Amino acid sequence: MVKHGFTRAYASSLQKVIAANTSNRIKAFFAGLGVTTLLQSSTATTMVCASFASKRIIGTAAGIAVVIGANVGTTLVAQILIFDLSWLTPLLLFGGLILHHRFEHKGKMEHISRAIIGIGMVLLSLTLIKTSAAPLSQAEILPVILKSLENEPILVLIVTAIITWVLHSSMAAVLIISSFISSGIISLNLGLLLVLGANLGAAIAPFVMTYGMNARTRRITTGNLIMRLGVVFLIFPFLGIIMTFYNGLNLDISPPRAVVHFHTLFNILLATIFLPFVISIAAFCKKLIPNTKEDSTVTISPIYLDESVLNSPTLALACAARETLRVAKIVETMLTDCMHAFNEGNLETIQAIEKEDDKIDILHARTKFYLARITEEALDPSESDRFIQILGFSTNLEHIGDIIEQSLSNIISSKIKDRQHFSKAGFQEIQEFHQQVLNNMKIAQAVFMSEDLQMAQQLVESKKHLRIAANKSQARHFQRLRDCVPESQMTSTLHSDIIRDFKRINSYMTTVAYTILDKEEKAAIKMSC
Image (tube, rainbow, N blue to C red):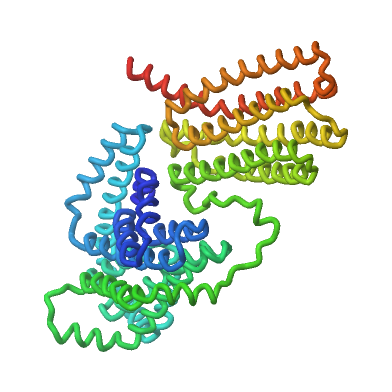
């Protein structure tokens, strides 16, 4: 609840922090540390980095530096939660519940209230674990089993790593271990061994989650696993010395807190050893996981539809919007190529346009199914509006692709094959009309991403001007027919069909502006009420 609450409330901001602070390893480290302290999940931060790496937003070295910071960040949260904060539990639960009822379906505050309830439940669960585990310390068989486990350290590491992988949280595992120590169920020596296993297991979860993804993604999680394995093997032989040192100093540190300190020191040691060498680690991971040879299917695969963020509507909608904008760029290229084919009389360009339409159909279908997987109940009103807007714009782009491929390209092919020529004035009108539609297409893309009201109004006005221009063009064309211009008589049908298709394309593009204006009108009505 904490992770989902903060990612839904601040998803875009957290992604921007990571993406904007990777110019050097130190900034990347602190970006990972800060974001993970808020999310309470190094796995979530690692998956964001892996996603960015797959899209070439950050490099492997920068991603690994962020992950190192994330590993330290999750230990800071554990340091806070180890204190007896049970008195905060009713305040957080009661306060979070009131806020949730007050701001339900009202955007960011609803998600923050869920995060507050989540923190209260974390504190409550720790109290319940301590209370429930206390009687186990008096059991007869349990101490025998645990004592035998101390003699099988490799088995302990493996079992704890698997449990942490199932939990998807090293912090949760460490806090449970700390609770068992405070209840007298396990010794400090076994507790430290369990912490090593927990840190190893924390790297397994993202590694498994990205196993089937591309090479850039897997390098981040593989680097994380290699670093954690290295520190585990480094510390493992010296656990006895660490215990002797701890006992000899007679420090005023309780065993439960010593476990959490050990968890923090593990990750600080990892950062100290590996942060200066992230470039070398990245180079090693590139050799270990080389780029695969891309086949033809890769070129028609979505780039921005990140499966790992589907539980955060804000992030998922942003991914869908970026993929839709990618489709818009393809459509824009198709429309530009139409005029090149007109000018050059090149049938190969027409064939390329038809292939681009196949790409649009695939990307539209994948975007539609991706949007369908976003939980509707998790969307606040503004997110619901954005959901409809993205789906509508994506569908309209697919329609435009069909118009270009099934109608415009056929008209151009007929013109080229039949060696027909437009009159000079007629062809100039078509070029001007084409340029106006192309300009409106660029404005529509900007409106779609920015949701700017002024630009939306400009786009609607452009539609009116285009309709007037179409009527004038049609009138001039009929005048040329009356004047018996031979080229106009030969290409009359083609001229009318081209103008008609340009108008249809422009109408589909303008639809995105109406969704913005309708949203603004609803907001104005709500304010007046």
